[in-house]
Picture (cartoon, one colour):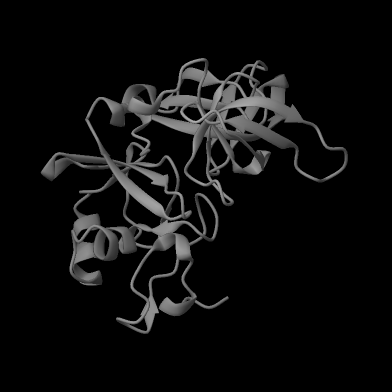
Length: 241
């Protein structure tokens, strides 16, 4: 597999200039998927905190970038939706979200909001001694009880002494609030009004209703990210309307 990536072939979700240089930093294996945005590209091309790769490496070597509670040292490490990035020296905190065009956007948040992070449960497995392991969408694993289900979202702490401790839970259920992170409705936040289970390997279909316009639309479970229960947690998650 090549270590190079042409800018013209970079995912549209990165939202970078395509014709300034020929090549761009390629995401290394790790959290999220191949569309994850390398932290070097975020620092240099998206936010302007660095002018070139040398400056990016210098910033990272000084542990000036904290991703989900841990210093990031790899310029190729990918970041994705709902990741929390903290820049302690300048007092800035950001949450990564998706806009209506499916592109990564950085929402500035306060220090209190940066203490927790939202994670989606991809599946769960039973490990030694009958313990239940929750496998998250971004690759993280958390030990928990059996009350959580695939498709649910959990709020985890990013504080050093309680890192990845579950502090809240948003089930994938009718009546709860969800954010759409893919497809033509990407970026919308709406209430789930119906869940249609489809037999076989085809994803289940979800019907949602926009709280403001009362219009309904459909999507599939992989595009659903739970963000609240009866009342949406819009202010807390910094979702743009």
